[in-house]
Amino acid sequence: MENTPIEFNLNGSQVASDAKANERLLDVLRGEFGLAGVKCGCKEGECGACSVILDGLLVNSCMVAVGSIQGSSVVTIEGYRQTERFNVLDRAYASVSAIQCGFCIPGMVLASECLLAKNAQPSKEQIRQGISGNLCRCTGYNAIVEAIDIAAREGKGLW
Amino acid sequence: MVNGYLPASLQQALEIRAKEKVIPYGGGTDLMLAADEKAVYLFLNKILEIKTITIDESYIRIGAACTFTQILESPLIPSILKAAIQVIAAPGIRNVGTVGGNICNASPKADSALIFFVTQAKLRLGSSKGERIIPIREFYLGRNKTVLAGDELLLEILMPQDGLNNYYYQKVGVRNALAIARVSFAALLDVQEGRIKHCSTAFGAISDVIICREDIDAMLIDKTLAEASALKAKYLTSYDKAINPIRGRVSAEYRKKVCLNLLGDFLASNGI
Image 1 (cartoon, each protein chain N blue to C red):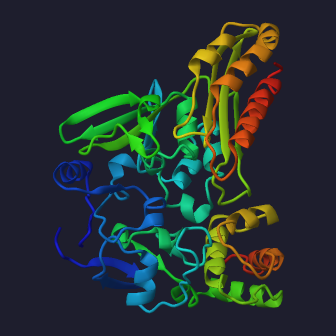
Image 2 (tube, chains in turn purple, green):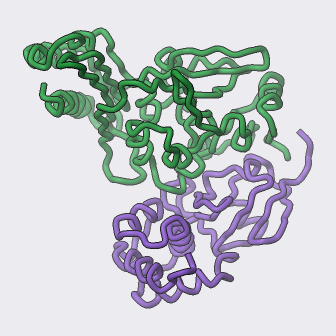
């Protein structure tokens, strides 16, 4: 094993991490890169609060060892919030008060993005499947489903 | 990187596997549950040779490092496998979790392994010295124990193509997403010209390993549906004796009752 850094693209910039390959991507993003929008909920892949987009796909960053992402691309909520799609989701979530404590929201928004990127006009059932790995203990989900439905309609052409 | 190797080719991976004490890492979704800071991973997630799904005259060939999402999106994959994979966890897990990891983690609750049992799939194992192909039903020695040698990797799953259309699959869990099976059951019944040509059943999550009883299922082979109906009570009684679930998050009695209910429903849904 050579002691070379792990290189990947993080929110559009090339970065190098000196973390051990077996460390959780979650811990590296929060500890080394200071990205506190990646929330640590369960470290068991159950809650989705640590969701990030890895090579275009939603993943739970607690379940990913950082050595496996050498050469990959990671987008966290901090990077995603610079996009027009984020603005549409932001307005939609706010319009129906889909946020209470907010802890699940970075993961929920990234799950919304990944769903809409795959299916720009999802049914309510498909929305529920898209966010099925993201737990929210405040809202009861209905407002979140509504928000994603609104974003799909308002954001026509963006996804 | 330290505590990990990211080989670019299968040959490189097999050489590292032969020389070093490493833990093969598919998608990490089981391994990272009990993340060990001393672990040295052999990352297999970027090796293209074991990430493809192809078909030949006999088998659907699924690379061990294929993710669940990749399998769900492939037109080559039969419905019985998709039925089990689409209820695994949630999108964020399916996007990285691999079928090879699901098999080699050697849990009797592994959702994809149940389907490979009932379809009598084979596994292609490889090392730097050569390859071997074994039936998946001979792969497990017990919970978390397999016949995979210290220098071997699971390379590919070979799934038979025929007789998969008439399937039955149920996963009993406590919720729709992110559920670990409390009992899972899959079955195949191939009826041709009024006679049962093939019957195969598999029970998951009730014991240390997935349970298949070819000897009991053989009772129904070459029978008409009417003859099978006459044998139904005997068939169910045989399974009642053969299935001895262990207690887990739920009681053994509950598991047994669910197994027999699912078996009965499988037969009833086929007019038996």
